Length: 187
Image 1 (cartoon, rainbow, N blue to C red):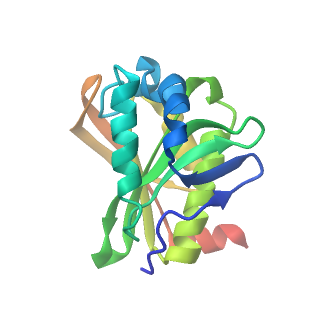
Image 2: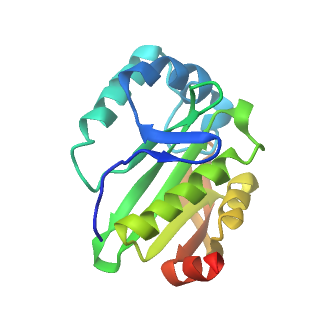
Image 3: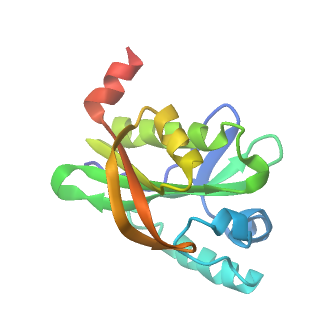
């Protein structure tokens, strides 16, 4: 893989860029303190804006690492931070990554998560040289699986009672897309 770090990416409606300290207010109000958004995630809702500020500063401090990929999702029309998408795991041995995303509930069911994920998939395959991109979700969160399918990812299977999130122990549905499959989608 040819790591590039968190580069600014754009779509028709979105800007994906590095987190900045000015994003803290939007983060706190739009998703990280919302128990509905956090329902299927592995970390708790932030109880205060100070927690969000500390985590934001920690994320910002990691951007010098070229294998660190963490974007804030900005809606072009309002310039508002509405969610995030990142590479959660990198496996250099097989040129594989795992991605994760979260979005404020005001923007659910509008195609925004799939628009952001599609752009990240394009970047990881075409610029970083990844061979396999995976994503996983709680089987009770079918909407997340629909985003993965919409982006060309294939269901691989379910790991039974293999994860722990804010709902407790859960079954993990696994999806992936390979570089060759991505290229076929383009033609």
